[in-house]
Image 1 (cartoon, helix red, strand yellow):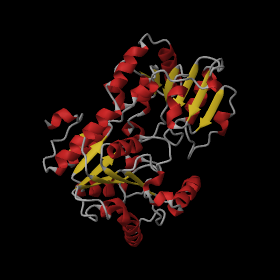
Image 2 (image 1 turned 60 degrees about the vertical axis):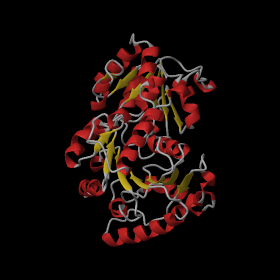
Image 3 (image 1 turned 45 degrees about the horizontal axis):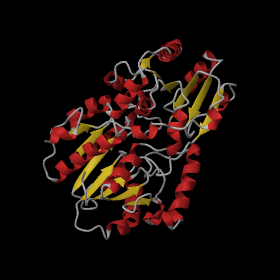
Image 4 (image 1 turned 30 degrees about the vertical axis):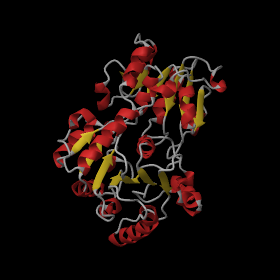
Length: 398
């Protein structure tokens, strides 16, 4: 693993939000011996009513002493910054003001970084993100794309153009999904696909929480963010198709209304569950669900929860996704409505052994993903980035 670098990590998610790839990779880079300045999202669109709680939390963290130092972080090499900026600023003037504000808030975290290289690692294609490339005198700028941003609901109309500009300014582009790779590889000489991973060891001997032990079977479970990417109506149809069983939905609810779903007698909405409790909850599932909404951004989705379900030995039912082609026999797919319900039934009847699923998860660890990212950073800093790859692994570099 790379060591001794300072990584200015412009993340796609708040540190305290549901645990995703950005936090996982940042923490691994810090524990490997790099100084990681984790900057919470800068905002990519105008705020809406459902953002109020997140914005209030940002303000509290930004004004607290712990948010301005590394005291709130789980590793001394990791510093968490909650920047205060003009929300949703998109004009040139607003972006310029935010750029000055951000540089001022980050400067103190870079003053004592030492002689190691500086990496600018960005996730979200905003005008501010594009303008930051070169602003810190970084040795390497990397754009890490994990969504079809231009297809997201409420995306600013110039998102595709801004993303193209961010790619042109960045030395390297990393994506997780195959559709993202197919579209971006022709636009940049150094595009790499590094999917999400899992910590399979955390799922071994996981203890089932007490509240799940008496749930009627089968337990059909969804784990992840409950937002616009999820087909709430399809979850309701699933619950009603299995009235003798239970539907458990685990994760924070953001920009969707789940009142009708939660009113069904066999549905259990848990809200946010700490990351260390997730394996126990998954141990209580009989099937892992991936019911994505029918919208333009869905084909660009790499389902990170796939690996967690497999690490728990679970059969999986999903709406169709391009990246599932890499995992034949691991997920039953069905179109919305009866097709998905049939996929759930096939998953329940699957004869694939849990050990086979766990073996697939063991081949897709976060350790391996972090090693791949490290190899890319080292090659980029050495001025010898490898050719674009649809399945980058450290061996490619050698």
